[in-house]
Length: 64
Image (cartoon, rainbow, N blue to C red; front, top):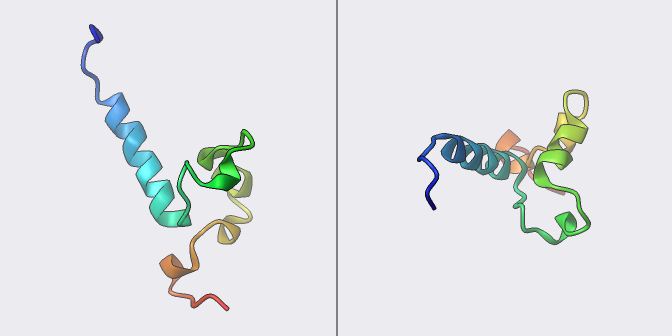
């Protein structure tokens, strides 16, 4: 608790929030309990398979 206040934590949290909004997934989802993180989930699809992780609602596409 004696650490200096930093904006790094806010930037990290904002990045996680953006990933949640773009993917429609949360870091606490069941699929991430095996050791995979939300960041790794997105990083594995970037840059060639981004369409596999972007929430269809973000793209304006109705799910089947």
